[in-house]
Length: 153
Image 1 (cartoon, rainbow, N blue to C red):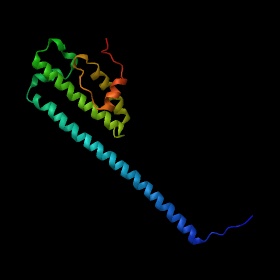
Image 2 (cartoon, rainbow, N blue to C red):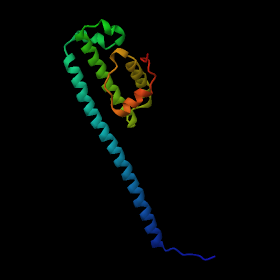
Image 3 (cartoon, helix red, strand yellow):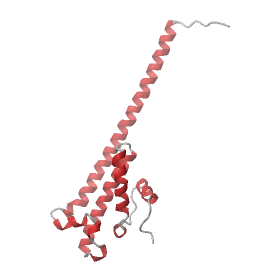
Image 4 (cartoon, rainbow, N blue to C red):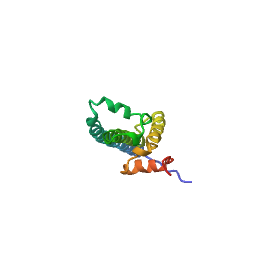
């Protein structure tokens, strides 16, 4: 067997290269996390704009509060104006739930809160008269499609 003698300088260079590689991996992970936070911030900003759009017409109208609880009215008994309000509130809920879904997928939502949100999404989705005809963001729509459809006839 042949013994290979490695110089001290070679060991120092090897350790230096390992240190540089470790630093690059760390920087890469930090950049990925920073990007996730930035994307989530953009989604949150767009959600806020959408929420403002849905809520602005309802400001100052105390009668609208009864439409927050979908169990407090029968949709077919509402006037056309009341249906607009009920639809607006339901659309606002969709925007908020869709944002929560994205935040969860990005790893920025606690599991405990997500469990609660999943049941809220199902209750929201089960309001057949108010279920939106428009498609949601693709990933959220795929999630909705995976839920039990209690509106199917």
